[in-house]
Each structure stands twice: as C-alpha cells, then as structure tokens.
Image (cartoon, rainbow over all chains, first blue to last red; front, top):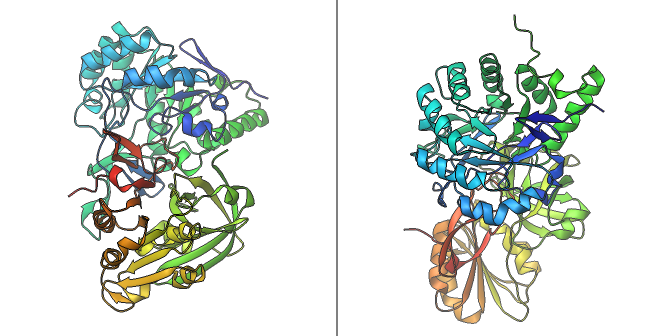
Length: 303
Length: 251
C-alpha cells in the first residue's frame, strides 16, 4: 500500500482527494453515503460575508462530457457556517477548507479575520467564480488585481491561504506568479470555464444567468495544461482540479504538477467517485512502484 | 441509510404513450425505502448528469419509473435493454404526506401524473383528475381504475375525455375532498393551488433541473415560505413536495 498522504502548507491530508467547493455543500448530504474521513479534505461551498440566495433557476445545463452551472454563490453566510456547519465538519476527521468569495476586498478580509479565529484548516480564496455580477472573477483575471487581493487577504489570514485561479485568463503562468509573489501559500486550479447553452426550441439560454461555468471531463485537458504551466512558474504547491472523474485523471493531474486534487462534477455522476479515484490511484502506485504522491507530482517529461 | 446508489436490474421497458416509457427496475434494498412522492436519480451511460425521475409505483423489491423522452439522456434510457443493470441513486427527497381517514384528490398534468399513482394507492377512495395535452399522451388510466379511483380524464384539445383543464373538474369536486395533491407544470400547480386556497390543504410536487440530487450542490434551489421567513430550499431535498402556501408560483 502506497503512502497516499500529502502535506500542503503544513496541513496533513490522509490522501490527495479533496471534495471540490460547490459540489459538496458542507458535507452532510454525502456523509449519509460514506464517512467523510475517506476523503483527504472537503472544500466548503463558497461562503460570503452575508447570506446569498444565488441566481434564479435553471442553474444547470449539460453538455458533451460536462455541465454548466450558475448557482451564484447561494450560501448561508460566514457566521452561519462557523456556528452551524464548521464544528460538525471538523468532527468528520478530514481537512476542512473554507472557500470564500466577496464583493470587495474588505469582504474577503473580514471573512479571513473570522475564519482565522475558527477551527478551519485552510482558506481557499475564490477569485474565480464566473457566475456573480461582482465578487469573484473580476479579482482573478489580471495579475495585478490577483496580487493585490491576495496580499490584502494574506494580512488578515492566519491560516494557510490557497488562491483558486480562473482559467478565463490570457496567461495562467503570469497569474500564478502574481499570486505566489503576493503571499499565496498554495494555488488551486482550475475554476470553471465560462460557457453557454441555448434551448433551440425556445431560442433562450438554458441557464437563467445566460452563461455558466463549464466543468466536467470536457475541461480536463485544459486543466492539465494550465496546472502544468502554473507548476512551471511557481514553487508553491498546486491543488489540481477540473474534470477529474477517474483515477487515471488523478495520476495525470499529479504528473502535470499537482500536489493534491479536487473532485467536483464527477460527484454528480457518481457520488462515490472520490473514493473510487483514491482506490484506483493507490493500485496504480502499488503496481508501478510509486511509494508516495510526491513521487508523481510534476514528473511529466515534456518534449 | 436513507438513500444510496446501487445497481437495479431493468425488468421492463415499455412504451406506454407517445414518447412516454415505463420502467420496472429491481433492487429490494432501495425499493423497500421508497415512499410516495419521492424520486430517483438515474445514471445514464455516456452522460455526466443523472436524470431525476419520480417514483410511479413500487412493489416489494421493484420500482416503477415512468418518464418522457425530453432530450438525449431520456432517449438513451428509452432504448436500454431489459436485463441490463442501471445505477440508481434512491430514494430521494420528501414525498407526499398522506394521512389516514382523509379523502384525497390527486391532480396530475402530463408527465406529472406518474407519482400520483403511488400516492393514490396509499389512500381510500381517491378522486383522481388527470390532464394531458392530447389523446396520444394519455397514460396510467387503467392503473388508477384498478386501485378503485374515481377517475377523471381531461385533454387540452378534447381528443379524449373531457375537453378542458384539470382545474375545471377540480372546481366541481373540491367540496368532496379533504386535501389535494398535485403534480404537473407550474402554471397548472398555480391554478390548482388557487382553487384550493382557503378551502382545502394542497400539496404540490415541483420539478427543477438538478445536479447532485441530495441537496448538496444547490442547483435546484427555490425560494420558499417557511413560517414567516423566505428561505431558499432545495427541490431535491426539502421537496419535491411542498405545501402550496410555501411556494412562490411567480407572475
């Protein structure tokens, strides 16, 4: 049995598989299927300073090998999360990552203050949500705005800070470097790609928000490419995500340069996907003589 | 355990109207847990999202699932072979609240009719009003008769049964029942709720595009009134069945 544990910024994960933000709520619904201790970690639904109702429905559409969503950060707010969800989640014996999104830098900093005083293990700075009018992605598409929000939040953040990057950018390496230089402890990537579907019978978008964030197996090659490019540009660890749905994808993403992984959309197809991926990864490592995840991270030999 | 995803064996896949199919699937463990008004989430080969389908009926170790072909996923389902195995997450959501000693009226429109069969079977002398666009879409009439329903059929175009809407029939009989359970298109539910208002309690089963099916992803949220508060709830978890007064029908 290979050693699947990973250490990201001093936080010990028993395996590299983390449930991705927005697909897993705060974990309760999936805990009725399996103990969350099977997961390396859980990244919470995106939390904002005040509660949000999110976008009108429909909020989801399917595409070939993927989906588009525009939930719009529906969540009960940071105080509610700390009061009602965090203790329960912490008791599940898995790493707890609080994913935060804000309208303004002040929002992010206020949440970082509150969460720094809580028992969360890490904070994931969501500057890449494509589905809200303000907050989210407008911070995440230019190197200088990525650097400035990261530096601001870092001042208030007593927990390891993961910056979650958007793929909707010109040069991902430049963005990754901007986050690192501003004090990010780790990167997670990629968030969703902005997409659109139209109902040909009504000539209207399927999603009420018109556009949505695309995820699922269809975006996997884009994610691998971006993780590879970012890994070549920074020294901080990268949590790779974007369309991982089977163990082979996990291996590939690690080889591209990821130190841990998040699995999201695959949960909708198979709620047990993270467990199956983890088991398959373990078998692959055993069969191929890899003793630890570190031995896989970034080993791709490019031409 | 309240729900799980497991393999079901497809015992029957039968076309029962234009574009409408009836599945019987076998899995004793999960079938036993199913209650009326709940739904299942079906894994479709080659598709990312599962397809949420209401439970039309159940037997000791089988579920009956009636669905309409609306897109690629349901088309694939309609072509699946008897004997194959299907992975189904079930049973999901909160169903109809059926109390003993009350007379219920079940009002269904189109593909909203199937879950009412399972519900009507839990009651005595149910009054059932089913409406369809046209004769070629009419389903489950014999099934409702078999369980002793007082059954009404309407079609929008008059090609079968009464020419009119389910609410036309409901208005005539509202005095004969204690409670109404409805499932169908939102405008129909709104009209049914209006007929019931201040007269009898009304439960409505909603439909929404879904992701996870268990309440985690918040894709299928709707604004609902719980007490005096407006709260977002997930149709897949708090629903699909709500009290009519909890729902904002819009317009």
